[in-house]
Image (cartoon, rainbow, N blue to C red; front, side, top):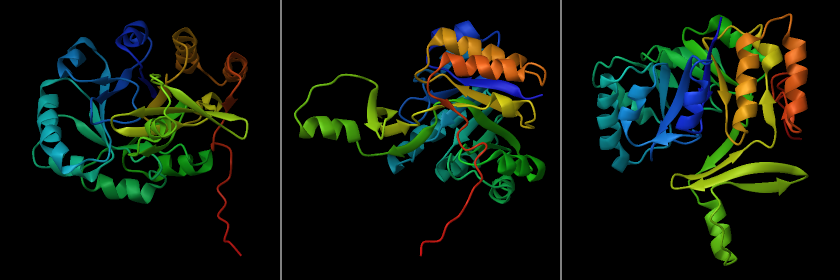
Amino acid sequence: MSKLLTIPSSMEEIEKTKNIVDGFIIGIENLSVNTNMCISDLNDLKKINKDIFISINKNMHNSDLKKIEEILDELDNLNIKGVLYYDIAVLSLYKKKKHKYELVWYQEHATTNYDTINYWNSFGVNYAYISSDISMEEINLITKKSKSKLMITMFGYLPMFVSKRHIVKNYLDYFNLKDNSKLNYIEKENNIYPIIDKKEGTIVYSSNILNGIKEVVNLNVDYIVLNSFDINLDKFITIIKYFKNVTKENVKEYNENINKKFTNIDEGFLNKKTIYKVKK
């Protein structure tokens, strides 16, 4: 049975959910994107006795390399499960020494096939975070032929793209507007997209919340991930309990309950066949 990870938004959330989840994905300040909670003091992790995965997943600069190497070394003193990486610089630095934890290949939109997952596995990367841009048919093929342990997001808003440009700040500056909000929204074609502009750049999320609980009962991966971003904590705790206790007998009921709690639920690409079209 798959273990359950969440991407928490605060220490309060961790305290309230630690007894019903198996672990958390947590970011490192200035070195992470698409994580709701980024810490600067690694000692905070000692308080969490769960499967901890640390996300070091932004595009790195040369100026980041020394800091990354220091953190990779520090993490050996903590009981963490693995490190999620996007930039291959993290893999290169990781391989310079023998570390106690494992690596997770986490290039959201690129982790779409078992051949590339197995390629990175040959370099000692024993985990892969499957993209949410592909169908269940493709996901099941990966689970059958991948040599790596696997994780995938099955609930929450999905990061659509990250830009190093400060899109919101530039817009506000251009029109001489004042806005201190940490979270903004873009409306396009009647869809509302959450957008965050911070030091590392701009992140735009999907307009709808992915709900993959129907697929979870037949999914053979090591970790199911739920993302709490921009979701009421009480509602999110209920969602965790549904995913934790879902079976083939109650999945229909749980799915209907989730759909009633939100007005913008969908199944993403899980049940959409991938079609490649050539322009005329």
